[in-house]
Amino acid sequence: MPPIVKKIWILPLLWSVFGLFFIFESSLILASQKFNDPLYFARQQFVWLILSLILFFIISKIPWSLFTRLAPWLFVANLIFLILVFIPPFSLKAGGAYRWINLGFFRFQPSELLKISLTLYLAVWLTKAKRSFASFITLVLISGSLIFIEPDMGTTLLIISSALILYFIYHANLKPFFIFSLAAFFISLILIISSPYRKQRLLTLFNPHQDKLGASYQINQITIALGRGGLFGQGLGGSHQRFLYLPAASTDAILAVIGEEVGFVGLSLLLFSYLLFFSQIFKLTRFVSSPGQKLFLYTAGILIFLQTLINLGGIVVLLPLTGIPLPFISYGGSSLLTLWLLIALAQSAVNSTSPPKSARGLRQPNFSKYSKI
Image 1 (cartoon, rainbow, N blue to C red):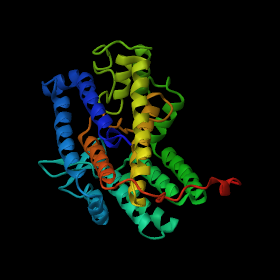
Image 2 (tube, rainbow, N blue to C red):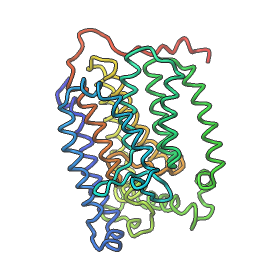
Image 3 (tube, helix red, strand yellow):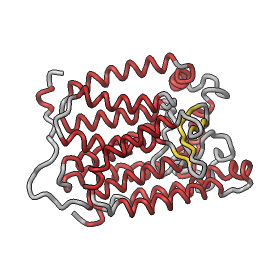
Image 4 (spheres, rainbow, N blue to C red):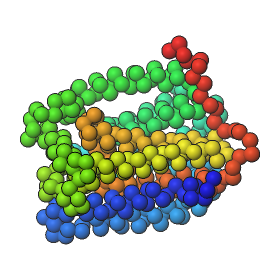
């Protein structure tokens, strides 16, 4: 395999730089009004990017074996952080939710870090000994419930879904996967219906023209932005949504601003680059020697894929808006740092192995025995 294919960081770096430009574009007016500094949000993201890159190049050089030993401790520490978000003086309430830990000089979202620590721990834990589905799902639900009560249902579903796919990849067993997924779907539906704001988001998805100045306002502004973009877009700097029409223009809805400026063709190229990245990750699983490394690479790719899919689904009004950012592009320091740490661990897995001499590693799924399902 060419050496460049093993460099997982190339496309994420291009996305991060691309995101810096559009964060500046989409937050220019808001930053000027709120902070009297048009570069405020772009500068914040740039600082996070530099920190992320420094940590990436340090962590990616560390042998994978060290992370396998640290995995349980990192996971337990993350659970402690998830509990601390509810305990003063560490807790920081924002937007009606407790998702941040405030250390005075630094604040972060432990739920973002769980994407790494849980994925790493499960990849090691599943491959060390035979594990039952009951013990696996108990572990996942304990982690997910701490995020859900913040509340953050979008991230909860993202993490649980990724963990379920990880289990299925390793065990190639559709039955528990199918049963739990079906149960999770109905439980999620009940939780959505029982919560007024979640129910409103779901109803808005089915009827976006209802209450255009209220609950449906953001969806309608996203639709207007994509409509104005057309085939080739309005050109860089041509977005109207940056003039404070679109809420969360630099975070959850940044893809709408991008679509307005570069059009359908530009968006298609961007999404194609994500597909190239997923293809690269999955191909690299054939070049690592241990099942734990393979599992981690698979799940890292799936996590980024699902996050991209959820964000895109909300923008094109196929899924409810959940607050899940577009990977590497949306504004948000915790999200950017987490994704770069995830890539750093994946790069470490690739760097720490040589191509296996014989076929070994993960069990290959055998779908034939589930043909009756």
